[in-house]
Length: 300
Image (cartoon, rainbow, N blue to C red; front, side, top):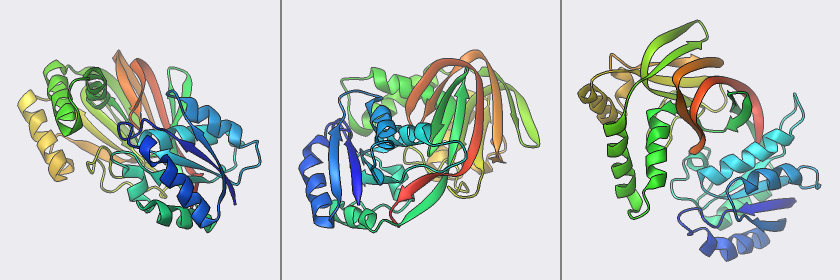
């Protein structure tokens, strides 16, 4: 099997760079015929994966974390013909959280992962398509508006703190700055209009290490949503504590469900992320729709 390996050396705070030799050794041991491309900038993996589709590869393997996987998936999805599935996507999970790979059963051990993919078996999962102020993007696991991407923006600004403390500081800053966005949100058979603190759209159940939407499945042809309207800061903190415990969906103010499509208008424009990547800091018009079985995974 001939595959393209796209390795992001920055994944896991440059930890992926140190595992490049182990990745190539695992590919050789499993009998894969491979080329390795080491990315140098954000977004590069999208173009490399997109190009690989026309270069007679039988699969493309993302070596990195959730962000790397999302970029490779976007490249494959952008290259896919309308109505057809993508070239198979494989994963060497060498990022920090590796939520996506864990949920879909990709082995953490590199040799095992290589053998898992070398079988050539494939399976299909759903993906989400986002149109943000007229621009198209895809997500394999999660996208969110309002507070969640605002915390991501705060996280990016912090350079002198690392690890979990960095995220906690970003979370505190986000809560201090939090103001509601006035949103008009519609989904299959319903909707909401009013001040909004959080809207998370989930293809899979877990994001950022938290079970945001425990009922979400990658193969059900639906996107799950979790919505928190404007509430007092104390109530919102209670919601976040419940999120950490996995009981937030039971909160009387939290709205959740499953749908094939969501449409959102926001004033002011809301920040939005897709699999952790900031797409806009002030999006006013967002459309989400599910593409059932569109993404092909390598291994099984």
